[in-house]
Amino acid sequence: MATTDSAAGTAPHAAAAQEAPAGELPIRRQSLSSTNFDIVSTYRNLLASDPDLTKPVAAIESLIVLLNTVPSTTVYETLDTVKMHSDRLKASVANPVPLTAGTDLFLQYLVSSLKQQDGSFDAVRQHLLRNGRLFAARAIAARNGVAEAGWRFVGEGKCVLTHGASRSVTGLLERASKSLNAKFRVVYVRDEARGDESDRVVKELRQMGIPVAEIPEAAVAHVMGLLRQVHMVFVGAEAVTQNGGIISRIGTYQIAQLASKAKIPFYVAAETHKFVRKFPLDQRDIGFKQELLDFSTDVASKQPRDAVDYTPPELITNLVTENGVQLPGYVFEQLLDIYGSLNG
Image (cartoon, rainbow, N blue to C red; front, top):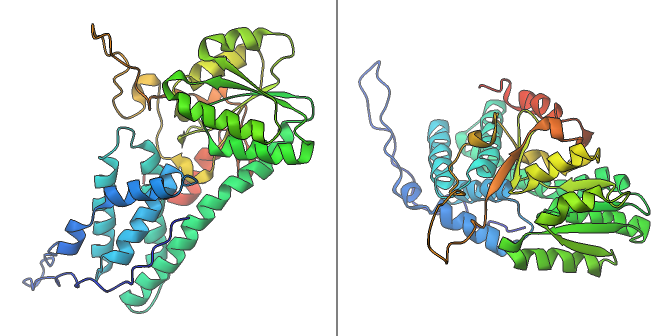
């Protein structure tokens, strides 16, 4: 995991609040160092330097770097700074939903920590920095918990169909291969728009000793219809919505529909830090615009590389999290515990 070693307080302190007449709120001038901090580059560098980071965790770590680099003198200034940079980070990507999961969770953690701590603000801030790093480390370690919770579903002699390049799914299959001596098979649905990534995942699975068959997306219905060839589906998620649905790699929705029709269990391997306070109603309600229907006469027109779709909870058999195997309704309960109110 990428670490942050910048010493807090090395940058010039933010300007103090101006004197205000009695009964009026003081005006806080934005710190120059806070304004100049590049949260977007920090986030991108963290992702590039550590392939094990998920997008929500990279967002959290970026905010930790922010707190460690940009000094603040008040609770309000800290929260304002984190909110401002969270918004800036989310505005920099086409799909802000995974980043929303991370930034919302970290902001809630900040608020909770500030309420619990007594003493000087500097002591509170140092507590946040120390425990913020621990928070991020635990979020990354959650992937191992997902693998431990879900590998037994695989079973000796079974066949798993998977889609996308989920690290949680790969970790789960790796854990299963160690216990089952790789005595199961994987059908990997190849994404031609991301062929290099598909090649990498298939290579990793085969190096574990797992027999892998690659199929194109157009062959999924045919393969699922073959008698006893696929016993379960495992996919990951970029975000898990509060109603228990998932936003994931484009094509996940149709695979879930086909699995439901064939009565094949459809499992989602996802860490709880991907839970997000969002409630899509359908494909038009994922919260950001995708140019999938880009009608063109340009022969060089290409399919969007990072497109996603929404899979509703009724198509999901179970969520496999670091807290165990759960029904989709578990997400609502968890978010209610964290935020007090899903509308708060």
